[in-house]
Amino acid sequence: MQRLIRILVLFLILGLGALWGAAAFNRQPGEPLGDAFMRQVAGLMGQEAAVPSVGGVQLPEGMVLGGPFRLTDQEGRSVTQAELGGALMVGYFGFTYCPDVCPTELGAIASALDLLPAAQAERVTPVLFSVDPERDTPEQLKAYVTNFHPRMVGLTGTPEQVAEVARRFRVFYAKVKRPEMTEYLVDHSSFIYLIGKDGRVRMLLRPQSTPEDIAKAVQAQLATL
Image (tube, rainbow, N blue to C red; front, side, top):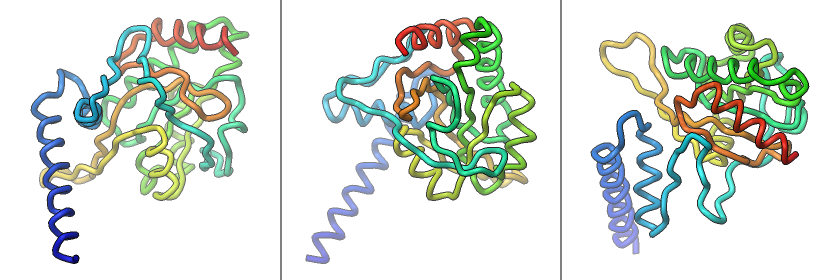
């Protein structure tokens, strides 16, 4: 029995390795490795992977992303998704030591909010979900998110809490440390999430969406709330 289990585990490891290899080989220009991997998994299961578009990503039928969560905000308070304020969250999973992608995406989100009429903008809460709980303390997040928007919320937690929220939102993240680097980076998927008060994802926006596209998507969601 133990030998059979070892053989099954070996095949599982080999299978996952093959999928990661196929994802790395077949990923599209600018596509995060984690998203390419999920596309390979969807294909293996006979499902059509969601394809990013200007208007957002159409989730496969029956797929539910997100859900209720409890994390720690930049003030050190334990908060749930319902306590963050507003009718809609514009969420992004990243980290404060990110050298390029995260600042670009967070800047686009902040610019999108500035494009909205004041009455609409007040119903929206921009949120950075940290995937680097080791370094992203509440103090670090507070100093970081205020650079983008005065109402942006930074959320962190224990490694276990962060991993659970990432699992619910299907977010890929992994530490990357190369010999020439003094600090590690975190490789992560880069979608923008429009999230309701229940924590469920209402729409996904592709990486590098323009502020105008984000603003239009937010307005469309607000009209249904």
